[in-house]
Amino acid sequence: MTLTSLKPDFRKQVAALSQRRDALVKEVGALPDAQLTFQPIPGAWSIAQIIEHLLLVEGGIVERVSTVPDSSGFPTAGAAEGAR
Image (cartoon, rainbow, N blue to C red):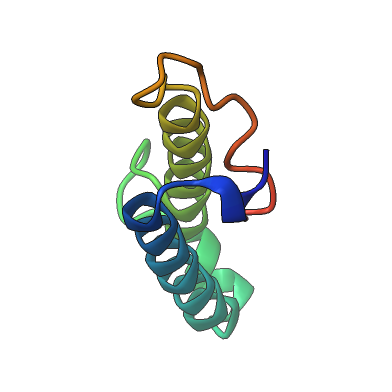
């Protein structure tokens, strides 16, 4: 399955999430390395670590949601392919 075979609501949400992710990555990509890797206190996460965490969690959520059975009872495994 592809993104186009998903229900319209879910497609819209995945597209909006993708746009927000792209905007965040673009904004953060403009920061200097020193600011991206700065930790305000020892053990605190840097901006780069927080962004990496958000991207990993987002990918996991989209993957899990895309494998939830649809109304016919069949899983939509792989439905989020190309969503990123």
